[in-house]
Length: 131
Image (cartoon, rainbow, N blue to C red; front, side, top):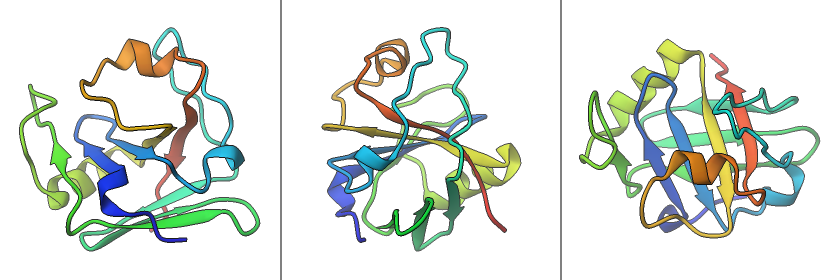
């Protein structure tokens, strides 16, 4: 299943994040509960980050492809709003061994991690990267 680029946001960091909005896999992902900030492993799911596309692969027929050419990448060493590029995000994912994937009803206007991780409506978790 292809996710429209306007429904994704890549956020750089020591553990990079992929935010998804209106994703067709939302209901297949586990409900996320991480009020202390410790994001659990998303059992049975993997991510394949690449410069031109990112694959989120789940159990059975669940999964999606995000074309990364038109998707914004934000963040860097100190700022989660600075524009960045997909190569940097992929390097972050490689270093972390995967990424956190959060599926939401809509992309947030501001990145408030404590609100996102304890909203009770986000689904997902940490997904290991496949080589």
